[in-house]
Image (cartoon, rainbow, N blue to C red; front, side, top):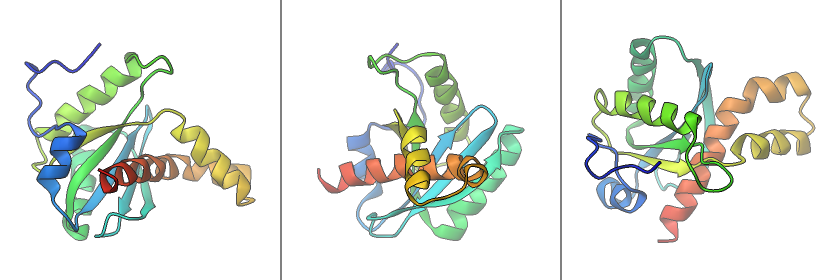
Length: 163
């Protein structure tokens, strides 16, 4: 399954168009939408370092939008990077469709540019990083979503800075 150019995607852009749209010195928001929780991370205005921010419960879309809009306004966010769960063979599965639906709903209510970034192994990498920092297991699990969002955002900003 691929994104169709005919699909109405509002402000959802390819990573290259996203880069053109956000310009330089832009703070970005990384989102890791899970089944129960949504991990959020932000980067500095120079888009060099991604930092875990918070985890919010995936309840009603309206409450998620309120929280995300609050973060966008308080931090002068210029763009959103959403983790896309791509299968190891490169295909998109059921989780990817859920992320596409979530992102379309977000894009109808938030006007800044949105792009996707491959989130393969982000949870595993975030968990392993916590392990290397000698974090206890309950703390690792509690911070997993926001750390995964930071891992996703860091991958995207590294790519954007090297283009």
